Length: 268
Image (cartoon, rainbow, N blue to C red; front, top):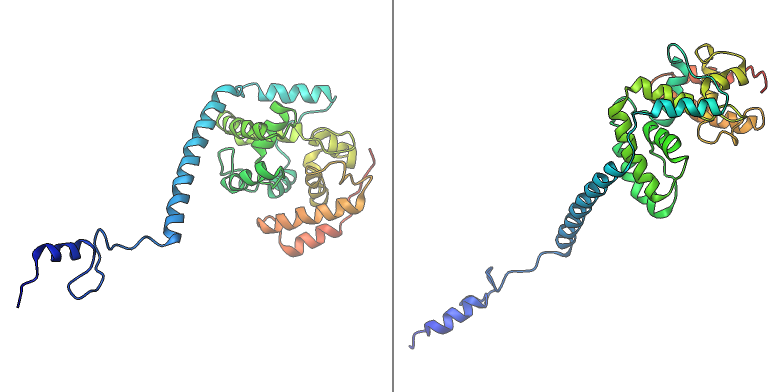
């Protein structure tokens, strides 16, 4: 019997075929990766590239955006222009709790930007929709430094300014500026004038019913104006109370009792 030619054997093995005709693993006989593995690899590479690009964009934005050391001065100027009164003394606990529960429940723990909102931001930038997630810092930056503009570049700028605000000011300072700067409908700027105008009280004297009503106005002050649209205001207040229950500030029973209370509006 003739022996197998060594060259033929070598060729069969390089082609991934053994002596018995089966396909073996090897350079030529290796199978391609499954489609999902190739897709995952490309997605990871794209995510890494976007992350690098994002860092570069934020770096440039950090340089071109202004400093925020004058934030308090800007808020004071806006209050003066509206002939409004700034907060004095301690922050009003119930108002603060209602605002944080509704607008930024992670305020005490983030650095100006909340990653939960950041995940939704790219979608909102593409669709032009406001998907929520803006922190108090971002809202303050948008109002004080960008006059409320909401274009794509403005949103990037607001993120950087929010990071700067959180680094430069205490959480209490930021809350005070936010509450002073807020427009709360019916011509009232700041919680001092709003509390006096709607209820005839100082912010620290407001009941839960009044504080939750006031916090609800932040999203759309004119649409939820309780003197003009009481039904809408009540529906929005119900959302604020639900959030206060969610964060553990009130029990469900307490929130239901608050919802039944009279607002004791005095007009405006």
